[in-house]
Length: 362
Image 1 (cartoon, rainbow, N blue to C red):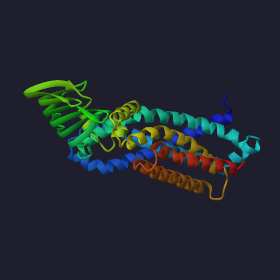
Image 2 (cartoon, rainbow, N blue to C red):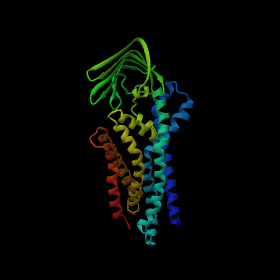
Image 3 (tube, one colour):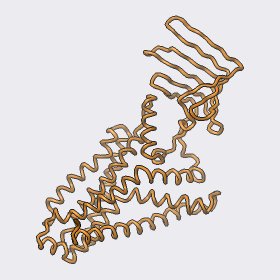
Image 4 (tube, rainbow, N blue to C red):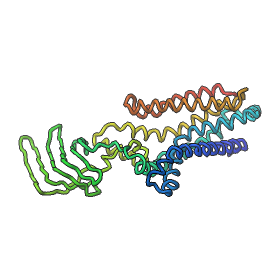
């Protein structure tokens, strides 16, 4: 059952949180618009795409990115006001323990964290895809870092393809080769001077092909000069596309499927996708940690008042962001496992939160 104290704190927490989110969102939209206004004017983007496509999804993106920081600022802001007005002291003097005081804070933080968790895993990636597709179409034409020449790629654990050149415009290949191995021995070789993607599921048409099969010292050869053959290969035109922010455009289900597909192919360098996957679950947990830190810092009445509390809170938030970005760089560089790089700041700040709670005003 929620007591009057619980409802009072929850109401203050939510109202301050959403007000903080509104203010920072408006500032972010104004800054982003001022940076892109020339691109909006010079490009062929329509007003509908700007108003209904780009900015609504930009708001979803920036809010999802900053929700932990919004939580910390909101908690410190209204808690320090309560402390300045001697409300916290009155609550503690009435026999309410600090642990009991934390309950409505944590209930609200869990509610915000659940919203953030759902958004991170589904809604924010959906919005990112719409927003980034618009950016790639009108503003950032060189963000695709996918290789199209001299591509070596596994399409199965023991099957590798080589592509001399892939044309993204019409999904055609020049000089195609597929090799299949058994115990490190080549058992099948397929060559074609050109290949064309026919459509899902993974259908390709090979022209001027040559097929060799090996069985020990025996070899068979099939030549189809001037002929074509249709076959299925675990290869899609999307495999040649690699946008810088591609991992943020996938829902968690799509991200897991992509990681699994690449692993079955024997492809490495999946760190940025694993970092994104683990980040989506770690950030909501950060909301709980920063809530505890905010209460422990702001509940004590000090001479500096709200200004000092906000300064301390923003410094802690900046330190957390710095540490998390630092750990992500190491995780992307394969210096540490991605899951360690993502969760390390949370682990460190959990101990910081515990220390602040122990030393908080009781």
